[in-house]
Image (cartoon, rainbow, N blue to C red; front, side, top):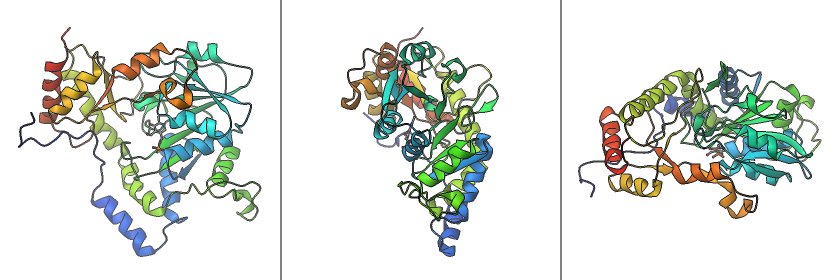
Length: 360
Ligand SMILES: Cc1ncc(COP(=O)(O)O)c(C=O)c1O
């Protein structure tokens, strides 16, 4: 039973304050709600953080993935390697573009794409690899077969691998600003790239197919309205300015968990040596995960599964066994992670886990 006086420990809590309120109020006062200067400013901050020449803001992480896949020219007859353990949008966009998502197993410890399995799954039609930095942990992209790489960096804003920011490691990358991400605009996303042509295509695809280089006069192809409103871009600007601080807060929580959970039979998340984790989520792995999750919830501690094993979803059945993805799907448990967590909250989570999980 939850003692009545103890409030729940929340899984996530967006970092929005007076700065965001003032930024939104300014947009409302200006009256330019879309295609205004806030989108440009947000994009400039994103490009700087990702270390790329271009950042193009769109209406969600899924929209970013969709236009990224289309900008790569993926269509019918094309295969794209996608991890079998990821948020389904990663694979959905390939299918929606008319291509075939070819599932690849994940490493059961890092929960990121398994490079050896990727090499095995290559086909003559493979056009790209869609690699995910899952939960913000940078994936080892350099181990992957030599194909164009699209990074799903939805949760990896601020993360880095081999000294370079996630978002600049592949040919192009996608970010999400959903409320469980470190920077949130409610809904939102972006594509980053150093490639001028890809950036041009993405700008066109988010805006009906109008051609940016033709000052939006001609429409060479039909496309979407995937624009981000200036109201939402304004929300993201103050958060982008304090991205380092937001990441440091999450690093503090992650270190707090690591210290408290060290003696338990729990696989703790970590980035590779020298990398910076983006800490989109703090996802441990435990035996009897569903029981542990129910036990935490019964004590008012919000928690969640990690993400999905695509080969168990109706849309992606029949691609064969994926033991790494199965292990991750069955064992992953996301613990509360946000800047308002106190030491007392961390103690409460650790004490609850201590009673639910065995010791080394
Ligand atoms: C790995 C991954 N890819 C893609 C997405 C989709 O982003 P959005 O929810 O902004 O459409 C998410 C978001 O949850 C994600 O975690």
